[in-house]
Every structure is written in structure tokens, then in C-alpha cells.
Length: 324
Image 1 (tube, rainbow, N blue to C red):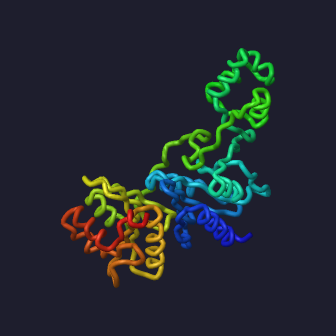
Image 2: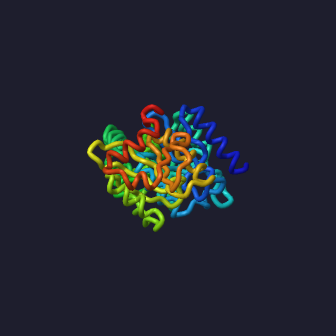
Image 3: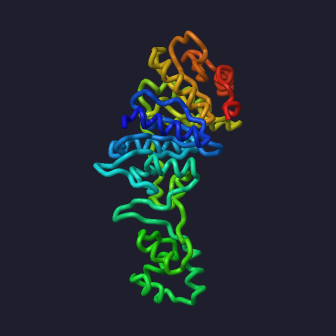
């Protein structure tokens, strides 16, 4: 299957599952292909035939964007090396959950979350430690007795009851012993924090020299500006002003065909992420492109204060809540 067809299939699946899906980010470089929202759940999706092509820099940027936009980043792919991704299994690449289209279908259409995740050494599941302890105590078994039944150490059983995850084989043995479900699903939409190392959000990249002027303008206006390196937009501006307005997706370049394309993609993303988008240019032939405000640098630099700049952007965009 071609990558384009795979993106189309995933987009159709998410639409069928009730998500509002953005236009494809058909511009390079790109850290994700589409954004999608269903209710409070916002996801950023990278779609690959071979997930080994997902590198550390892209993973770091997706995690940063997830933090700034309150979104869950993940990768949908078909295979790793020469092996297909197993259905019902969550993998991890550079801190981002990865799974197959079949797993995505189960999760988003059938509302059946995955139970298994891959980690060094094999496949694992999350054991509900409280249920395990209750079932053991119901039978009057000691830690040592359960350890003997499982063929593991007493200390290992104690760790299971303290929240340590178990191999599939151990989980199946436990459920056979107690004749009760003991596993917990992997909460992919919360980034699966419970089964991966909860590393801090990677640091922002440096501001590019050509973006320093607009970054300074936005900073003076009360935005924390987070530069990107692989997104369709140059930065995410988090509003730190008194009113705590919504975030901004920002772009900055000469007004070219490529800039128009980026502005259209940004407008589509803004509708899904519930943010405003603004593109700064030297000379603007229009004030808006499909939901993205077009603002001349001179206009932005001459704004008397942050509120005047916000008003300028508001006049040329649709309020995000009206897209919800």
C-alpha cells in the first residue's frame, strides 16, 4: 500500500469514528500528517509504512506540540523492519505510542483499547494491582504461595501488587488461576504514560535568525513563543496575557505560493486544534486565507500593545469555539 493510500485510509477511519480531521499537512518537512478532534480528545497523527523511519527529532517535536496544544501524539504504521506490527499491541518510538491501523480501528471505531505493549525483552500488560491483591487475599494465599503457583519469586509477586507490569505469559497464568480479568488497557489517549518512561517534554529548539523579529513582537504582546522545526507552522504562541486567550499557530515569510499553502494548512489545523492562526508577511495582498490571518510585519511591529495586536488577529480570524 502506498503511503498516500494509507493516509487516506486512516483519515477515512477517523472520520467514520466521529473525528473532525484536518487537511493533510502536504508540505515538507512535517512532524505529523493530520490532526483530529473528537470531543475533548485531540490527536496528532504521523502515518508511515515503516515506523523505523520515525526519528528522534520528529518524536521530540511531536511531544512538544502535544504539550503546547493539549494533544496526544502517536504514529500509525504497518511494519517495523520486515515484520508487521501486531494487532492489539502498542509500541513506542522516541516516547511516542505507535500502533497498526487494525489497532487504531479497534480503539477509535470499536472503542476497544489495546491491552498489550512492547518493551525491551518482549510483550507486556498492565496488571490491576488492587484486583490482584484482593483475589489473592480472597483465597487466603500468601505471597509465597502465589509465587510458587506462578514459578516466580515472592519479591516478584510483591512487585506485581505494587504496580509492576507483567509479561503476557504471567498475566495469562494469573487470570487462569483466579478465573478473573486482571489486566488494564493501555490508555493511548493519555500518551500511555503509565507504561513508558515519563520523560520531561524536550526543550524548544533555538529561534531561527529570520524569525527573531516576529518572535520579539509576540513576546512583547504576552505570548510564550515555542519554535518548531518540522511543523507546517513556525511556532506555537501560548498566550500569557491577562485574559489567557487561546494559543496561536504562527508563520512568517515572504508572501509566496508556498506561504499561501502553509496558511491554508494552518487554517485547517486551527479549526481542529481550536486555535487561531496568523501568518506574518512583508506585503499582504489580502487579510485572510481560509481561516489564517495575514498580517504585515509592519502592522505587527507598530501595534501599541499586546491587546492591539490581538484585536488585529481576531478581526481576521474566526473564533476557535465557533469551529467546535
